[in-house]
Image (cartoon, rainbow, N blue to C red; front, top):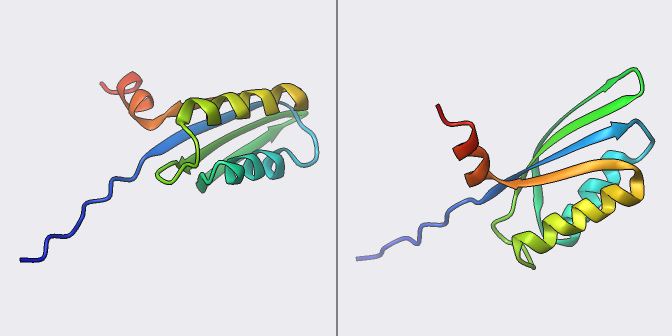
Length: 98
C-alpha cells in the first residue's frame, strides 16, 4: 500500500503599521523571501499618511527557525520606521478562538 506523506502547511501573520512610504510592501516581502517564507495573501490600506498591512505567509519551508525570521522582520521595521509584528498562525488562532 502506498501511503502519501501528509504535509502540514504552517503559516504566520505579519502586520505592518506606520507612516506611509514608498517600498514598504517590497521591503517586507523581500525580507520574507530571504527566509524562504512565501507570501500567500496581502491586504493593505493607506489612511491619509498611515500605512497598515496584513500578510499571510507560508513558513513551511523556512531556512531558519521562526524566531529568527520574526526578529529579522522586527529589525527591518525599526530601520524603516514602522512596527512589524510576526505571529505564528497557531498563536493567532488561539488568541482569536471563541
